[in-house]
Length: 232
Image 1 (cartoon, rainbow, N blue to C red):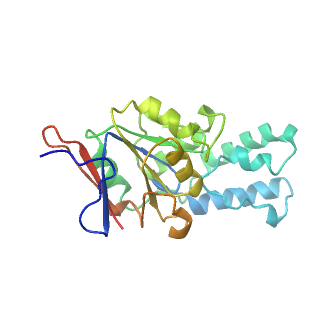
Image 2: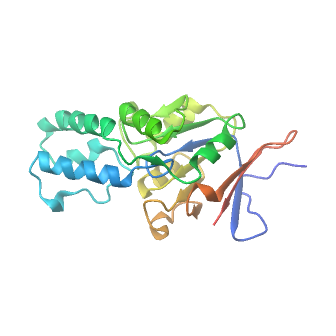
Image 3: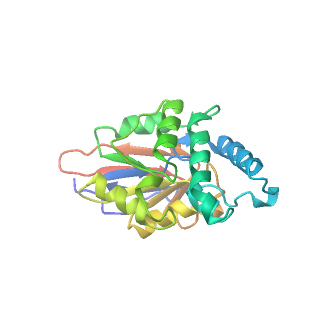
């Protein structure tokens, strides 16, 4: 049976499918539920620097902490503030958990197609949250230290694609508008989950689903490609 073409849609309008050679996941809000934890840490950050409540970054999720901090503090304070917040993020992990379907989907992906994570967080924060959520740390893990420009710039996912080395299309799974734009501009089809943003804010994605329980991976048979299916 011939492999399905890239971005092929199934006959039923409530599903979407594509062939793929790899997957790149965002971390926070996509694989791990850290929204309340991140917001708690940012309120602490505002207290540290006596910043008003209306300085709370909006939208908060999907961008590097460094990019938010540059908009809040003088340039000569940014580096120290980034390091201070990163240290808090890496140690304050109470409440971090895997999102529904994360463990099942990663188990399904393992050994079928290569996968990795592209996150706006630092390496220390990413590995701490993965451990707290009981999820594996992949060989490809692109973090804030690896890029000059964070999401929505395509650079994070371009680096992820280079490191993954997949011989075919790579699907991006994201929860935030900045990440969706980054993945699309890197040339990837994007599946968005509504774990941190409403569906109407994720319209740039190829398909929007509630969470990872709506995504399935079918292993290739003979010369076929693996197929990812998302149920809207």
